[in-house]
Image (cartoon, rainbow, N blue to C red; front, side, top):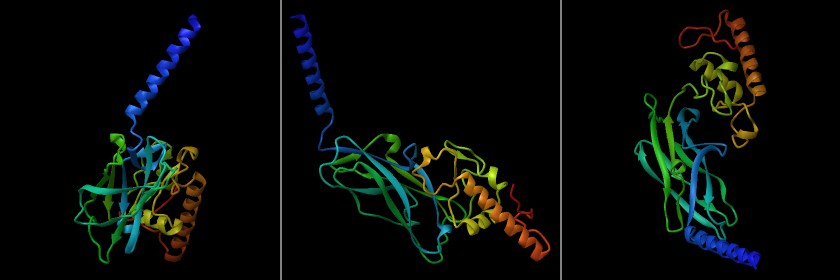
Length: 249
């Protein structure tokens, strides 16, 4: 008899939990988290440099993940600008549709660079976006509710050059002291405009722009060869903007 009583109490408790869950989670209302980077190291901020394109349309990708019950139908959402240099830059949102059964993915924010664009060459700008909430979709956790983009228009030292951050290595270990001349040479040799060297590939698998140690070493060796050829052809080494010879470790 005692075991039956305990069994009934357990059923009632579970039933109560189910009711509480239904009360807390409205199946008709979803929450969404937004971020840059990858799921293992999400960030609410990134940078965009207009110097890396001649003119025209380009994009910055952001990630999303739904919280709550799975979708049983397609769900559209929109972003909106919160503040920043909205009057100095042309931007455009795509059509953001999360398909039924999906809960995570990525979408673009488009930027336009007109001919002769000269904003942000001296001082970086910024712009901040967030979810345009609706009756069906609300912002998720506070730390992943806004998208902050630093706007630049010129070669600047990459954030990872002298600093080692989670899952990534210092660029200076493989490329040496920073200079804009060296930066330009790396862009020409590699065809890349974003420079990050991953330390843990499993943790950065979503970062398709990051390079391996082997790739970084190869680019450095290619630059060394070009610098040697330059010196042989011109009788002097290539100098950077400070009059110092451009070298690689």
